[in-house]
Image (cartoon, rainbow, N blue to C red; front, side, top):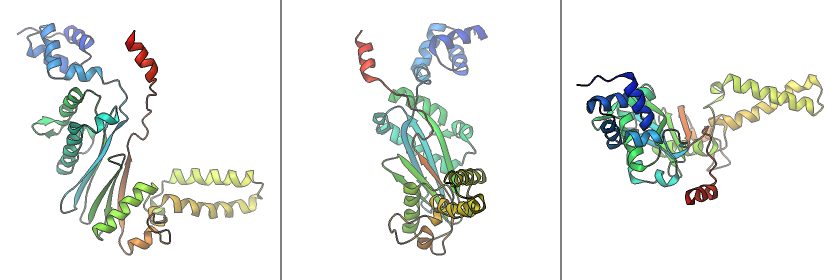
Length: 289
């Protein structure tokens, strides 16, 4: 068997754009033949996928899975480059599989998820294969998994544009769905006041102080004004204090009765990803040259 050197791996990597370990595997599988190794990578879909690794994947979908008993659930965001690919049957099947897989294996983080085995293959390999098959960069961005003695409910809005996973200590399925829809629509940042991030709270207070001073209010009454305005802030960011979207006469606390919301996660597709601004006219013109 030919000796695989670092130089050979480097050359194959530059030629194909594939990862270092994949290049090493390819060279080992082809007895060091550079041309055959490049073909090996293409056959596995790795070279094709690697060339797409620098593209921006801000589309895709948020998917959820909740076990039949409502005790385990997951929420996952998988990205691709276009809406067209997101609606591809292969992409939809992949996201459903991975969402259910997460609930079953309960991985600690993305690395553990990528290394876990689904249908006899590592999840990372399934993502690579999907990139090659669908023809766009596919990326597994984030996930959360809940397990509880209470109840887990999910809600997916607009075919995967927004996804919510919520844990309650009881209540009906209908109540759970109402709460999940509220979270999707109103985007709270905490269940109640105790859960509001201290840094976020102090920042809001400082902004309100400056607003009051800019309005020419005397410093001695500024703090009272801030206290009053911060209550309005709480009603916007705390789930239980929000006006219920299905009945403006009630708050979420009113519809919960004695049921407690333990935690929730809300994913909005592509949030925080800087999307590439495409100039399609220029792209078409360039292709015609």
